[in-house]
Length: 198
Image (tube, rainbow, N blue to C red):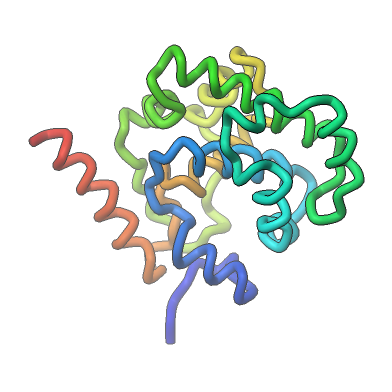
């Protein structure tokens, strides 16, 4: 029987878990997407967000940072009526604000990836949880990332949201010790280390 983390309870979650969650990502567009989606999840289930992911990609120009940064108040008004996404004005406005903040981060740090990965010394944190319920909701690292993003003007980037983001993009490997994906995510992190050392 295939062993997955115990939070996987549907086919959509299984696909997300197997293909994406915990895989180290250094693609700015993907990192921005996950920042927006994790913020959108606040107060909701991840399943709700996954089910609306296609809607988010359409509504937010496939998360092209420069394009979202140019969204007008009229576009935001239109998105508030769009049933394919979470119709929460604050979260929609935050996505636009965050795109503008990410532009500034890219200008100062070269890329969003350089900036966020600096919080873990460019190397994924490897945890060993027998059960996912032992994983924390936030850590000192997610606290620091949250504060830094807020300094750039980002919204919906509290420490808990930042920790979920870190898990999603592989900055931390929180796959359970018995999970079939844990070793693969750990080896992807090590490959990056070897490249840097070489």
